[in-house]
Image 1 (cartoon, rainbow, N blue to C red):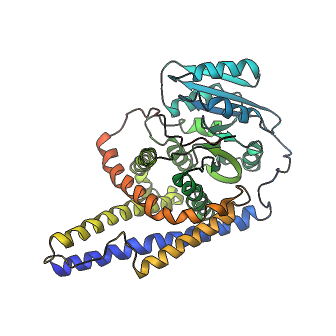
Image 2: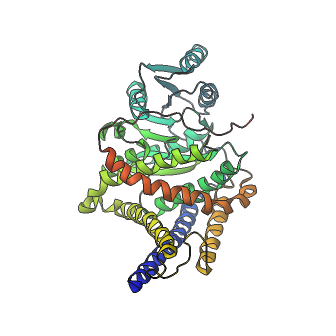
Image 3: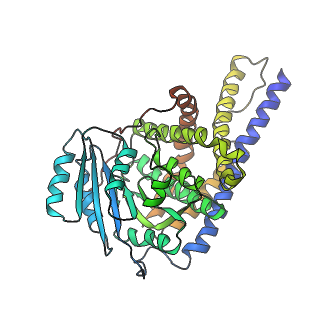
Length: 422
């Protein structure tokens, strides 16, 4: 028994240590390759070179209880520096004053159209309603609290113009609220984790997901795959896989910026990450069959990474349980170190994290000024966010299996943090 637990502990410890270490260096290498191929010649964020062909676009903004944010969001969307566009705001059965705000703005701006859904149908259905009413082939979809950069349309449209196989182009979300520790850490997270992973995945193959807060779609491609799935908690992950399974290309454009609000309470952060984790679990279950399909071998690395990430979270759980049992049953289980307290190997892992954070901040420094000031706060990322993400992943998978299929994913007003002053 003693030998069994000792072997199990060392096996889990090796996997728990080497997996994030390997992925971190893989992400860094992929991000550098992406920068060298795509960003180096264009330089940092700047006004884009005018396009020879500027097809018209429709900006879709689904709103649920966005009375506080709708006017600011729509004002930025209507200020796009683009020749021909329309803005469609979809009020998805809001219970606050969203409808009144949207109607008032529609009387002032001829480019703006407003659609009111009688009952809350969920973001997926709101996007589908907007796309069916849109006049144009290219759809730029943003959230109801997001501030779209005026050049974002140019940066995303150029991908559709260059390649007819492109079905979606996701942009580069930047955090607006930075007044609290959680807000500041998330500024670094969106660079070192979100932005870096998207760069690396584009270098090595396919994207795991577009950002639901800013993505441009080719309407005919979305129609071909049956639009967004109303029963998926994370419609952005699901539509990404549907498009790529159908043979379409999905890209990342770091110059296409949008400024967003994120949770700044532990409760709000937990709810958000649990929803993300449950959405990822739904996509894993729904798309696990790609491993049996050679024509989908371009998605195998993403599926492998998703499965390994799930196993890593449960490995951390088993290690924590074994550590507790070593105090309760000391004669049966050898004393082992806490998985939450770093040893000599943890020093290497921590150094790698800081290196990843530094590289990511350099990559995004041209798009988001002052990132260096948030570097200090990233020391809290492994302690707070790793723990939350591990726990949410552990909880999400059995919860998704228990809930089953077919339930409509409806809106829940998220924690938007402390809104920054203009």
